[in-house]
Image (cartoon, rainbow, N blue to C red):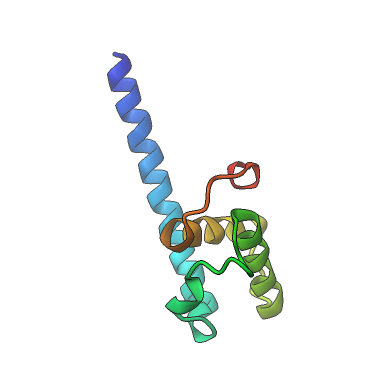
Length: 97
């Protein structure tokens, strides 16, 4: 029974994570982020972005400068997406909120 509950829980988490990633991709496309950025911009740059918190601050800065009007949860979703896809920084308290 425990294994079944564990399996169902992990499937729900994976489905939720997948939906969050798709939503982030949609937000990025709608905001036309790639008009200013290219994949080279998403490489690790120790002097600019070297942890999850700085990545989140960078995303918030883009949102402010482009006036996308994203909500806080959308900013966090895009930050998580970029971290998952490109940066791979360790989870922080900020990310878990």
